[in-house]
Image 1 (cartoon, rainbow, N blue to C red):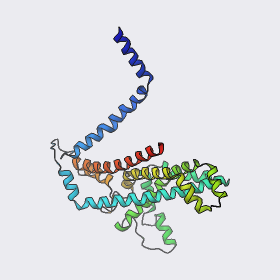
Image 2 (cartoon, rainbow, N blue to C red; image 1 turned 90 degrees about the vertical axis):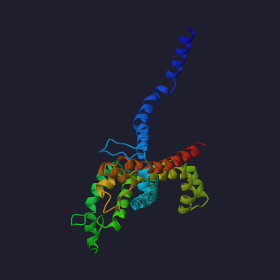
Image 3 (cartoon, helix red, strand yellow; image 1 turned 180 degrees about the vertical axis):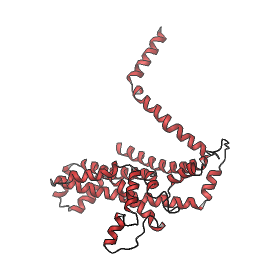
Length: 301
């Protein structure tokens, strides 16, 4: 009887605690993320193929990856794509957020319109963004960008068909796509700055540049750093836009890790090697996630 009461008491404490609320999320997390991730890591140490049932444990996939010159070209494309995309997205997002915030303080018309226009690129799916920009980059008379350049005197301009230009064009399209998220986070950060701090800086005689550099940016430094990390993780995982925009071409000029993993599995049917590429991508994302959690923990202190 006493054991029954103890069991009932334990069950009551569990029911009143966070367990019932966390259980569904944990089940979904384990089923949809933990288990597939473990399977991907496991397959990366095999020679598994989609068209074969024979599976052997081997390090051949990693050996082929790190001895293949194409891998280093893909890594170079990936890091160039991520670096310039993240830097430009963060800076442009901050500039737009500062402009909108200033416009609101001056009661200027159009501030809401600017925010809505900035958010449109974030709401559009990546595949659609790639298709739209591929139309704009079309090197025939229908390409809007080429049409404008011809109007100002530039002829025979190449974009996606030129390996030297294709990656830059892809980066530009991704910057347009990702600036909205940076703008939202920066704008939210600006709204957390107390007006007393800005007014104190004005009283001390600080000009606009000094207020930005010594007051505003330090006040939202944690927001900016979080913004950079989230943008980096998102850009590393960019796949849908590149597929519809360039397909990784011409050649391997715009091929990044996420696309290489996809092509290895569904193009070459090499599950082991594709999972190995995915594990490498997971490693980079995990490093950025660790930095993100470190910043969050530091902010809470």
